[in-house]
Every structure is written in structure tokens, then in C-alpha cells.
Length: 141
Image (cartoon, rainbow, N blue to C red; front, top):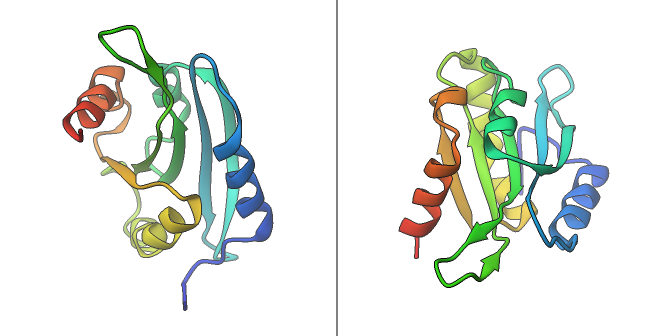
């Protein structure tokens, strides 16, 4: 498969480790960015037990990111699950060339991350809330 952006082995290893980490509470996020000059993906940050609102404040307001999120989803009957979702962080204030590069690599990244549910987030920090994530996940069942 030909791609515009390389996904180095260390990113693949970080994704695998993140995907198989055992969690008992809270949400965790692995944030990946594209280095435009080198055309490779790089780990931007890793958060453990972070709220969605805290995560929204940490993400850049003018630069796209892939956020692999292990999300604590609570059910009405008291059960919990930790679905893995991909937040396609693509604020509308981002530079066009960065957005184009980001969009071109999204499907490849999604496949390598092993995540089936993608949540588009273009509104910036105001749009990334627990309520928004819950609505997208509960609506998808």
C-alpha cells in the first residue's frame, strides 16, 4: 500500500502497547501528529486517566492530530467498558496543507491502530466533551 505519510515501527509498537493496556478506570489517550517536513507520524503525547475536558485543553487549536482514546463508558446498569475510539482532531482553524496531509493518512492510521469507531472533531476544544463522546458512542449501538 502506497502512503504519503510513513508510520514508523515505534508508533506501531506504541499503538499496540496502548491498545492492550489493562484499564480499570478513567480514559487514556495516545496523541499522534504528522511531522510535515519528514512526512512521518510521531507520538505527540500520552495521557493516562485524563478527563475528556482536560484532553480538549491539551490538544492544539490549530493543528490536526489523531487521538486514540481508551474511553471509560459507563452503562445505566452499572457496567463499564473501555472502547477504543479514534478521534480525528481536525480543528477548522488548521492550515490547509496540514489538513490535507492529515486526511490523506487517516484511513491507513485507522487500520494500523485497529480502531473501528472514528469520531470527527472539527469544532476544537468546545466540541470535545464527555457528552459529545457519549452521544457518538451510544448512538453507534
